[in-house]
Length: 150
Image 1 (cartoon, helix red, strand yellow):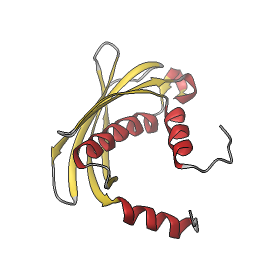
Image 2 (cartoon, one colour):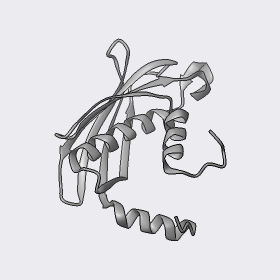
Image 3 (cartoon, helix red, strand yellow):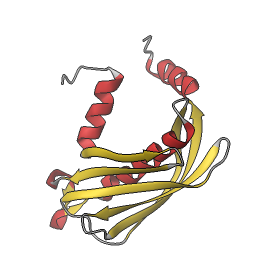
């Protein structure tokens, strides 16, 4: 994949690759999602512990997938607030990020999620307030901000 590529699919693929996404296990229209990641050594800091930004990103992505499953393709979930509590160090290897809707609103919803290791140990938990933004408005604002005519 070319670094110069600007297509949406390439950007999405590149983000998934950078984050270490292995597969989307499940998305449920009731507002649940499970994603599998491979925690890489390159994502670690001292002592072989995965940097917290990746952990919060994995849970945040699971919450976004849960919101998209619940609300359909017409919305873009935008995180307004994210709180993460870390319970145990995340080490290289497979991890599962799971998320679910806690309270659904018309424009704002509340989601929760956690990250667990292959043995089922919960490594971190998160809560999020998500704005359910109209996709056409998000795309229009993006084009205006970047000057992209496409």
